[in-house]
Length: 77
Image 1 (tube, rainbow, N blue to C red):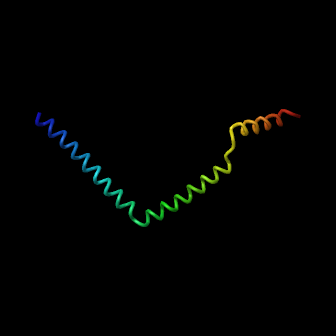
Image 2 (cartoon, rainbow, N blue to C red):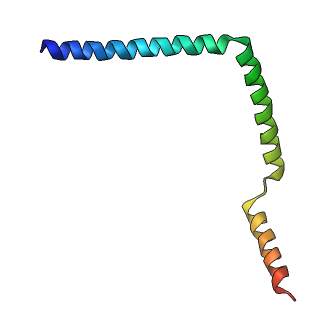
Image 3 (tube, helix red, strand yellow):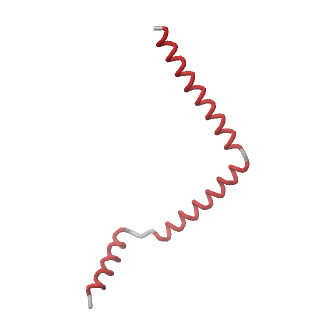
């Protein structure tokens, strides 16, 4: 019984210490200015890619009709 209690307490302590240390590490890394600048740079790149995808996006029906026309052009001599 005592061994089971020690095991549970030890595992809980390890999880609590690991959670606290990872929280502190991530909090210190996120607060540095270099990471904020890099996040802003990545955000700009992501927004540009989203805009590019919006311009290239078409409806599935339109895509199907376009492919149907291309296949039809290939069949007509």
